Length: 349
Image (cartoon, rainbow, N blue to C red; front, side, top):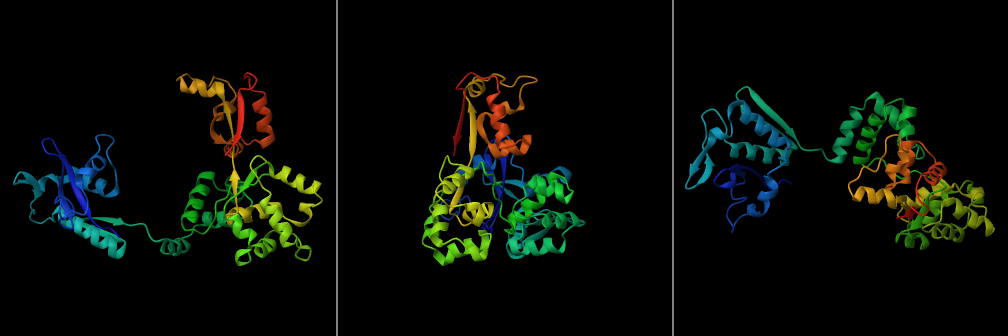
């Protein structure tokens, strides 16, 4: 719900001043105002850069074309207000139209002049927007959706759908906004996972969660692992232990996990249900970070492109995607960087 809209300007003598507002009394009177303009003025009209929004751009264009805003301004009792010009609506009238129509209909048409209007629309609710998108789904959207299988990463989806990766990202962002897909980290056996507080519900089998996990992740329904073993598997993830190490530990304990469980689906189930979270791996070069802190150019022409990822801000997933390397290849390349012994540190978070 839009509570109010106001139009403010910066005047050389008065400073930031409210010229028009809807509803009246939204700001200005300390006793009846909904908001305190003195608190907001530094954010509403910053010195630089200017705040550029759709409505602000529309009014700016109207001012440039025929002085729509400044032509209505007059000084009233030491302040500023507007007067109605014949054949034109006042700014306050336009703000009233915008507020009422956006709240009631989700869109509005501003009658700027006799032969000119401006359309504004509020983002649709997710259910409305999804129905609209289904009706107007293009062939590229259909190809992208057909490749979403829960295992392919964004780059592979774009490749299989024969579209650019930017187009695939845009389509997936829309689907994510409409809450029709889940975006998960890529699964690697070299990745680490750790329990979240929600794992208590899995241990207690709330709403049959363990049975749901078995139906989703167990390879053979007739050879389903017991509830005890599934809970034991889910609770044994920890920071610093990769999935392959987790598998080896259970194999050494006498349980061949791969024979009974699709590990990727098992981990995905834990992440989706809030039982597990992905522990990301980062690498930091003390020498590289020190060079960045001193303002020096740490990257050398012809140097290894991997070096720019050693500032502790880039996880291995990003390196894998952007450089098209495996986790093992990244590790080997890091070892071959011309850095002093002990300069590199790998940490999990």
